[in-house]
Amino acid sequence: MTNQTTLSSEEFDAIKQAINNIRVAFLTTQGPNGTLRTRPMVTHQLDADGTMWFFTRDNSIKAAHIRLHPGIALGFSDLQSQVSAATAGEAEIVKDQAKIDALWNDSLHEWFPEGKDDPNIVLIRVTTQDGHCWE
Image (tube, rainbow, N blue to C red; front, side, top):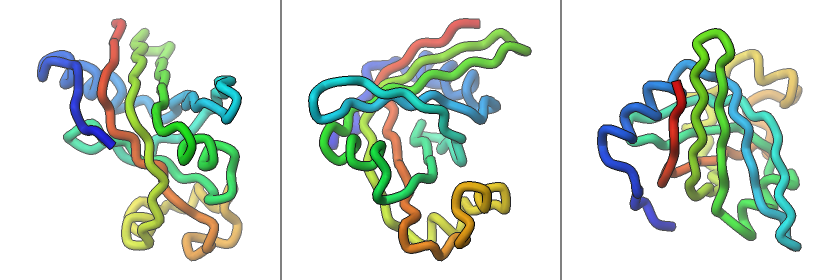
């Protein structure tokens, strides 16, 4: 997995600033036959380096897609602030209980009723490589 970005530091900072307060992202993955699939995901953390973290199930279709084709796209939009952004990067499925514990909040019980110790919980770590922002 490459960590290189095609963005200047100013562009990268503008995108991070724009999406920092937008919780819901639209994650697009590529299936085995090349078809694209987009679904809403809650961003649980945006690191200073642009890495984004999402929860999912290890046996989900999106996890299978990411393992097969790690290139993904994310879309963000906030109607109130009239800010939109699109990013592209590489995703990785991560099983790290310490990180799961650190990111866990009670709202996740809706999707993971067994709690943070559910053995099927994994994280999606997205390394941002490109993007655009509209304000």
